[in-house]
Image (tube, protein in one colour):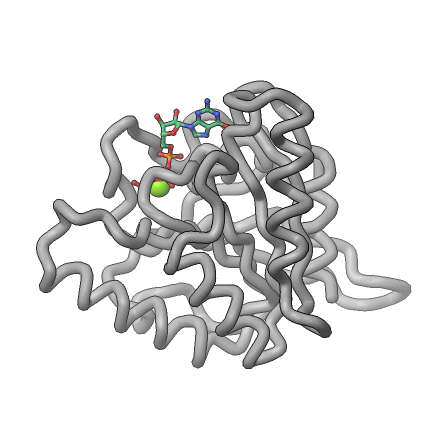
Length: 205
Ligand code: GTP
Ligand code: MG
């Protein structure tokens, strides 16, 4: 697992506090409680790496994790790669001022971060593509940023239901969008290997 060995670097309240903007970065975005931090832990194979919680609104910072340097083709210098856990979006109990702060910071991050290679969008497979998810997909489409969607908590559905949800979501992708989607579960490991490959492909593109 090339994502193994990820290490916590820092937690930032604003983008200016993030690690220097070079190398390659993939951001984990999604609604509050969707399972972003759990997905990060499953992908890195590191249970306690990102803090998870039953209470929505757990991650209230942008949390940066550094990966061991990734090989980059013949004779290329190793790639400094990071994963960024973004604060959850859309949790009503978070004060409006704070939500506005994160709207602004996430927006600025997505627009300005030069090392950003792609977004891993995490959505609960039982209620995918709420407004935040659609906005994110639309943003990626507009800016040409690739987006890989993890339909997580698939352990809560039958295989058949999960496959149907995946097909419905794929139908909604705009023509020409660099968007992909898969079924995922941090709990039972469904799709973890496939998602690792997708994250690596984003980092190394
Ligand atoms: P915020 O940081 O609050 O935005 O949430 P998050 O998106 O990081 O979610 P987190 O990973 O903390 O998970 C939220 C809840 O969903 C926790 O109770 C997790 O145990 C649960 N959860 C996450 N992934 C899965 C999954 O694949 N299956 C099941 N059944 N539960 C999951
Ligand atoms: Mg979280």
